[in-house]
Amino acid sequence: MSTATRGGARVARAGRCSGRRARASGRARRSGATKAGEDDALRGTLDAVAVATLRALGGVARDVAGNANVKPARFPRGPREDVALELVYDPLKFLERAREAHGDAVGLTLAGENVVLVSSPALARAVLVDQSECFQKDGTAFFPGSSLAGNGLLVSDGETWARQRRLSNPAFRKAAVETYARCMIEVGERLVNKTWSRRGRRDVYADFNDATLEIVASALFGADVVGARASKINGAIKDSFEFFGRRAATGMIIPEWAPTFDNVRYNDAVKRLDEEVYSIIAKRRRAMASGEQNNELDLLDRLLLEKDENEGDGNDATGMSDKALRDELMTLMVAGQETSAILLSWACALIAERPYVGDKIATEVRQHLKTKENAGSSLDASDFSKLPYTEACILETLRIRPPAYMVGRCAARDVELRSDVFITKGTTVLIAPYLIQRDSQYWNDPKAFKPERWLVKSPYSEGTLARDALKNLGPNDAYFPFGGGPRVCIGTGFAMMESVLLLALICNACELRLPPGSSAPKPKALITLRPDEIKLDVGPRPRSVF
Ligand code: HEM
Image 1 (cartoon, helix red, strand yellow):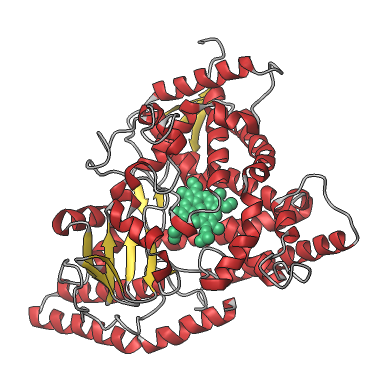
Image 2 (cartoon, rainbow, N blue to C red; image 1 turned 90 degrees about the vertical axis):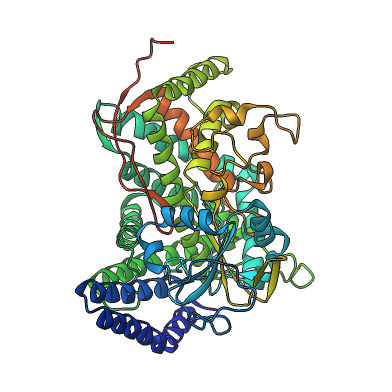
């Protein structure tokens, strides 16, 4: 399905649900009249806004199970009222309260949609792994697509997704990811040696957004993002991401086709980006046809080289079309930039609250650097697996502050997840790693930041628990910050390499502190678990203390 078709379908479906929307606001208005209070009228308006927002987030009305407030048989228990407002205003509090009141499978009405929130390892496994073929991305409420990411891996389904995943997997194997480490280190060193080299207060979240954008753009396009083209690409990406940031921050999702000022600017940025990306793709295809190839392959080279062996007899196998390539490149940018910036920001904030953790990372890095053959050299890809405490800090940050705090699926058919949890076709299932990863049934002292918990011996293998953290759904099936099953994050290795190397560079060179008198930054949840803002005092770490 092309982006245009996808967008078209969204518009058409939004048209079909407008009657329900009118009825919803009508109900709200009537209740306002009977209670005769301005508060109720306001609430009616807010309800309508929330309904519109959630509809736009989900984008669709359900054909099968979506009759407002009509619950299918065996729908799990949950609050009787529509909880759209509560979810939009404070998603984390909402998730916690819903589970406390109704258990690990909660039936909800969200802006008229039937949604089931699941928060036990067994139910998460059922949806993500064991019965994953019964679920799809299309139609999932609460997770919006975008014209920037098009029909890439994050949102596609069926054979389109499977083919794109087969063609993309090789570009994310360990050996390939190691080749992207050089740009991670270059960007990290620039951050600590220039931007953070003088003592002062930094907006850490903004700095990491710049750094991870540079890393992902350079991993994708390598030498093609230099000079004027680099500013054009980075400028357009920044404009689009700022648009997503503003959209997420308001909690109001206006469809991208609506001619608002913000949408016009965003669509212009996507157009500028498309021009550059298609031109780079054409240039690379020409170079490949004439036998030229870069010595060091970037992600685009690797995607271009892949042919789908499942097609024909192998000789007529084809790769990705220009449009498919464009959608994947943009998807990787969208999926890989903000999540990594969020992870690094939370890691630094948690460390700033506990300076001894930064000291321990610095000690680990300095001791390791001394053992390197080429003494005095900086970090490289091979050091990733030799910094266990630094890695444990990243794993613990992902446990306590998972950037993807909720993942969603839409049931492609009726499915029984457990004898008491029956999901009807068209129902959205929300799975909450945020709840499971902080649940005292599976974690000791679950709300505490304790990197050491990952360094104990693993019950699953000879190594530490950290070695098994990202296998399947993690210890007790209760740890999956990168999702799980066939749709597990393709960038897991990339993100781990990037965050461990950057955190090691940062703590080796810098000290991080919360500004005097300030409290720990609060999470703000919408599509991702972003920090509201993270301002930290940064400055050079003395070289002599160890
Ligand atoms: C801290 C960083 C990251 C986190 C927490 C994260 C988290 C996730 C999660 C939870 C999913 C599964 C979503 C679902 O099941 O619906 C996912 C999928 C995905 N991620 Fe990541 N991600 C991160 C970094 C990256 C990076 C660096 C890239 C690429 C450069 C990337 C590319 C993708 C793609 C393409 C998918 C869709 C995979 C598919 O459906 O086949 N992610 N990510």
